[in-house]
Length: 91
Image 1 (cartoon, one colour):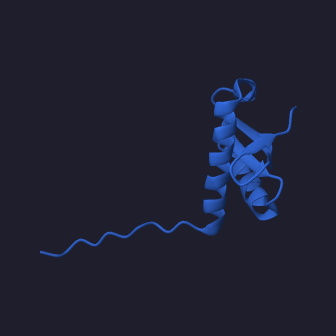
Image 2 (cartoon, one colour; image 1 turned 90 degrees about the vertical axis):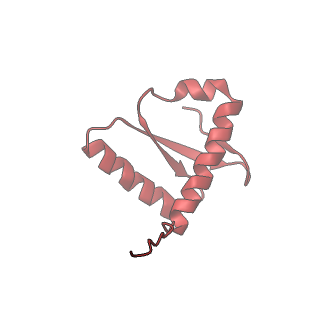
């Protein structure tokens, strides 16, 4: 009988920064109902931070891949107001 080994998936630094960006945006969504109404129903939300060019480029590439696969994609430019919250551009 062989012992099963479990390994934790590794998460790269860009993914951790993306998680933090989405966390801040989610908090902004909860706080502002008008912001919720701006998001297209059923679209893949791709956030583009104003202060992280590397993450922005990666997320744009993800958006292009999703669009090519037939998904509705919504790119949203996000300004970070602070470490804990985000505000977004008004269209």
